[in-house]
Structures are given as structure tokens and as C-alpha cells.
Length: 253
Ligand code: PEP
Image (cartoon, rainbow, N blue to C red; front, side, top):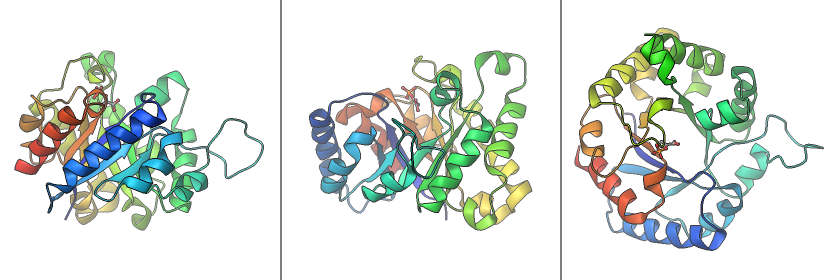
């Protein structure tokens, strides 16, 4: 059975102290929901990982990136092994901000995926089209090629460590959300694409999250779709009340 997941992506927000406060509040409020059927993940900046891990007993922790290389003279980089050494269990890879601002290609992402798997990190792998691609009717082709070129070199066993996040770039941080029908249509397509490479069972077991201006108001409708297994939440993960409202919406279905 695939997991229901609500993951926050804090991006480059929160001082260490602010991050610890937010993580404590979310962790305690999630604990009060127990038993929760939803896996909650906090995607924090690198410097928060170790401290947040010390207080997190009801939520899991994710990094937002990792290096392509194992170790060595790569000033400013953070390796997957370093991330794992903080107690962190997940890493977000392929976010559209990394693809577009930092030139992360499918080849670069393949290397990062390998480093993460070598260090027993599960991966939230982001895919999604820009507005021009959707308007040109190319959104399915774009997402298919991101999956094929970024992930489909993995073995079936390795693929069990992948969570997909469908994040239409035109919906990220813009206040424009995909309709639940658009999200469901793409999630179905992603699941079918996974099935064609890894088989129905693996596709059924893969959690596929929606991301892009998901908030307390629209989460309920999005999560009511059968192929939307949860959300990757940016802006609304920075306030405990908003994030908890989204978690509660996920719990309902
Ligand atoms: C994201 O960047 O992963 C994201 C979904 O952002 P937002 O929720 O702010 O659109």
C-alpha cells in the first residue's frame, strides 16, 4: 500500500532558531493526532537538519538537495552521506527551482539520485511542466521525459525508494493551483508511465504528491482524488496553522 504523505518544503526560509520553533510546534501537533495515517516530512535547509532531528519524534526530516559527488574538494557542497549522518531520511531532488536557477539537468539529477540511494535516503523526485509546455499540449511529454531520463535507469528495488512530486511550475508560489481534475489526470499518467517500466504493483505502491500553491482551502479537493497521495507544500508549510490544516485535509480521505 502506498503512503499518504504531506511534505513541507521550507526552501531558503527560517533562521535556525525559527526553524526549531516551527518544527517543535508541528511535531507536537502531529503527535496529538496519533495514530496518524499520514507521513509528515519537514524539508528544511541543511543547517537545520541535525537540530530538527533531535526534537522530531512524530515527523520525518528531508533535505532539499544533495551533491553529485561523494566527497572531496567541492567547496560549498553538502554530500548525501553528510545529510544521512544528521539522521535525515529523505531528500528532495529535481525541484523546478533547482532545475531552472541552478541548471540541474536530468544527467545531474541521475547522479544525485544515486548518491542519495547509496546513503539510504529516500527521494522526493519533482517533475512538472512550465506554462508554455502546458499551453502547447506538451505537458505529458515533458513529465514522461523527466521520469525516464531522471529515474528509469534505477532497478525495481531502487525505485521503491522514490516518491514522485508532480509540481506544475506555473503553480509553484504563484497562487494558481492546478484543478483537482488536472492533478488527477497527470497523476494517473505518471502512475501509468511507472507501470510501463516497473509493472503495476510498483506503480500502485508509489506515492505521488501534488505541489503548487496547495493550501488549507484547496487541499481537501486535491486530496479527494484517488491518485493524489498527498502534497509537497512550499509557502503554506512555513506556518504551523496552515500546514496542520493541510495535514488534517489529508487525514480526512
Ligand atoms: C514547492 O516549491 O515545492 C511548492 C509547492 O511551493 P508552493 O506551495 O509555495 O507553491
